[in-house]
Image (tube, rainbow, N blue to C red; front, top):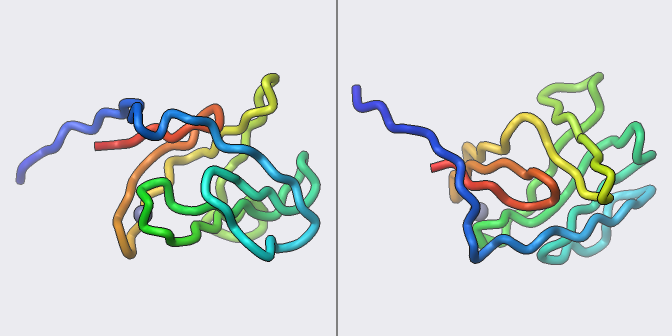
Length: 108
Ligand SMILES: [Zn+2]
C-alpha cells in the first residue's frame, strides 16, 4: 500500500477569507466566498457554503451535536471561524480541506 503524506498548505489562489453571514433559516441563494451560519451563533444548527474547489456544489455541515456527523464551529476574536474536523467530500470532486480562520487549508 502506498502511503501518501498528508500535508496541509495554504493555496494562495484561495487565500481570501470567507464572509460569514448569520441567518435564521436556510439561505435562498448561496454565493461564493460566503459561509452561511444558520441559528444562534453560540449554538448554530448548520453551516452552508460552496465547495472552494470551484465545482459549484453546496456543502452543508451539521453543527447540531444531536445529529451525526457533526462539525464543531470555533469562533475567533477577529470574527472568523474554523470547522473541526476537516471537510472530506466523498462525492463529486472529492475535495479535502480544513476551514480555519475563515480560510481554506487544502489537504493533499
Ligand atoms: Zn468541489
